[in-house]
Length: 308
Image 1: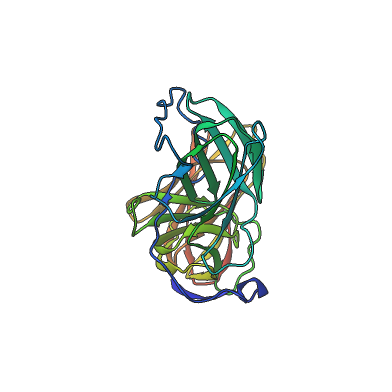
Image 2: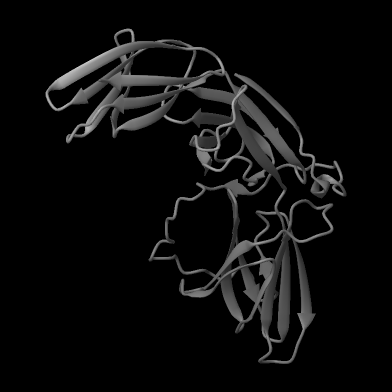
């Protein structure tokens, strides 16, 4: 496996400054699909006299005087403190002191009228989640602009010498730094998908198709920069096919020596991505078992036919 990182050849990288700052937002499990807990703790006042927001994350707060009854809050986010544009397509969630959800929207910015009181704001994008509490006083509006301290990573896996648009790929991204160090923060099955991540170091595990092909590489995500991780797998593709007519399901198994690598495949045909080496294909049809030996070399597309 060869892996390298380089700046992406997209113009979106231009215009970002190279000034960095410490990551202060926590990573969350991407695509977890988990709902917020039904029992939210009651938020206590942080300051009885002034509008306030807890200082745990980087942000900019602007407060304006408005007529009583016109109080509101608005939210936005930038990738870095040097970014001139807002980050796009964040999920915004706003809860009141009793835990009731007042806003659930996906947009670049969000705003809503609010009564004076105590609130919690959550914003999510990619593998990043931020959470803050704030207080809104009578006769005020508040605007909060978060600094995500984030960048993007594109994972580009391929098999050397082959074009394989039909081969499944999966990339798992684990944090090596920060509060979520050692935890899975992103899971992608789309090559080249931009993954938004807090600046820091990560370990990428990429699997190509069914078989025994896996590559592991470490990468650093820099704030405001879109980077690409190219992974070249040393492997070949075995197309398994049962030749003949059978009213029963064909069950496949792939062995390497005494080790069973793949089992549970069924159908007249199947495709596997395998490291270079010698293998045994086993086709089970009812009570009959047929085996054949085959060899895979780097970059090879090999037809393995079993049957009459």
